Image (tube, rainbow, N blue to C red):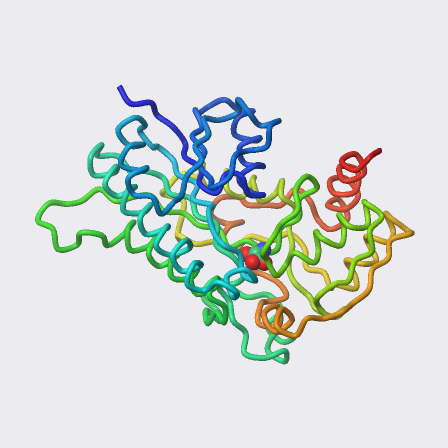
Length: 337
Ligand code: AKB
């Protein structure tokens, strides 16, 4: 008999590592994790880890003979800045990789006659505001506002959200028999900040980079202007969002894609909070025009009313608690000594 598992792709990334820690603590599922890279040594034993590529169809053909994938957290992706430097690769990983996994989930769903849950992190990059005046006016955007992304990554995320709706609502619509569909659920994340890992290749990275540099006594030149405002959330809330949406009864979900957020903060405000915790931090501003151009199209805040209404979403950490209770104490601990 095949072993029933939760599959996590992109498992060695920031969200992947945090999710494995959380899921393995509850022990409800056996975790199968996949990434191009091995997991850090201290995570050995928390999951069955496979070093491999989401584009490797042969690997997946082999995996489904051994495992029954019940829930799939598809986290593997190239982030926004990196995708601008390698748009072709970004499209392959972010779109073709996702499409292949949705097809796999759809095949598994058909075969067992029960939906595979497909949980997909989307992003504020799915938005594209036309100018700063609009960003200042529309301070919080709803899921359906300004869906005109200007980056390869944003286009990839928005398209994959639509693919998810297709596979969960319309796939095989011309077939004679009624198909069983995958159960696709997605959250649009703001910038994420972890106390334990540092991101790479994203455009919201200036927040966590500033904090981690300060904790290590390293100078940091922030690549966006001081007045840049973006929504953020700590990693622990991001994991609760993925798990909360995953656990919600299907009948209570009125959408397949939900905004989630915690607090909005300017780059200058971020610096102030970091300085309050690390008074010797050397933080300057040296905006990079291209990266600035990207964040200027992303909204200052997200309207997450639908998530709050449908599956009781609520972040545990507002800005005060995020810095005071989660980020600063854990980062102090991490770099101690
Ligand atoms: C990035 O900056 O690319 C990511 C994101 C906003 O999804 N953090």
